[in-house]
Length: 326
Ligand SMILES: Nc1nc2c(c(=O)[nH]1)N[C@H]1C(S)=C(S)[C@@H](COP(=O)(O)O)O[C@H]1N2
Ligand SMILES: [Mo]
Image (spheres, rainbow, N blue to C red):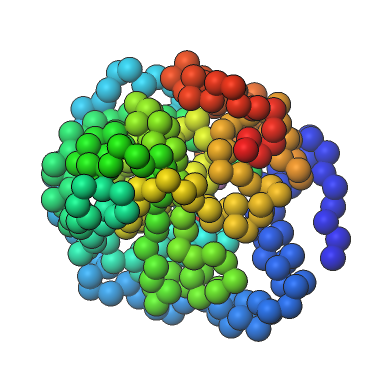
């Protein structure tokens, strides 16, 4: 197998070659997955969403929510159709074109569980949860590790508000989050050599930061399924893979979670994943980013994706020059 060495200016090629293709090819070289991949690639184009998957969203009347003017952009809002048609959601396949397949996911009933170091473990239905939370709209930049970016109006609530509801014990130092596991509707989950379910995590200090946001809506409407409905994280100072979609579980712990991308490519993706233009990915530069929904406009990437004023203090004394930021 030939992995071509890329120069910094060859970014568009990277955008066309998602890192997942690299890792799945590499894993195949180690044997085991070959047969499973061929069968899993048989697509589910002929399937239709079930009645449950096509039902209207019962919280639709809550949108649009009032915009919080504190969250400002340095660029135009990305056109909605780019944001809803150019996606990363490996549960539904490794291409960017998963929006149709994601419609297979039923998002009601949907329960979210709170586990581990909490006063009392519990589960709550998504509609009860959303109605308990103070919904607001925030404009955030989003920077994928693949060097593309967008700027979107999320609707949702601060993760700190959810943590207050969960009542974690004071000794908890991390919050682990997990995505649903439904291989019957999410065909990518039949590729069993990937570390499903998708798992992410934050330190409690990061999770309590005002910027850590749970999105339930986008562009003044309930979230589209391809963007992570009904519940999705938005941590704009970190590479996009930290912003886990389709969340069903929060677990409070003292053990740093092993995340999906860390498990898949430990030499390329770390737990911290803070945006840093000075630290190249082992296979491409992170100095600049392409704005999706434009005629390939590129802008320079900023440290912490421009959110240093809010978050830099979380990382005092850590070596932010370490590519994996361990
Ligand atoms: N469960 C889950 N969450 C996920 C992903 C995924 O594959 N599965 N991809 C991540 C990546 S790499 C990015 S860039 C963003 C993309 O979000 P968007 O498709 O809404 O732009 O979702 C993140 N959250
Ligand atoms: Mo990403």
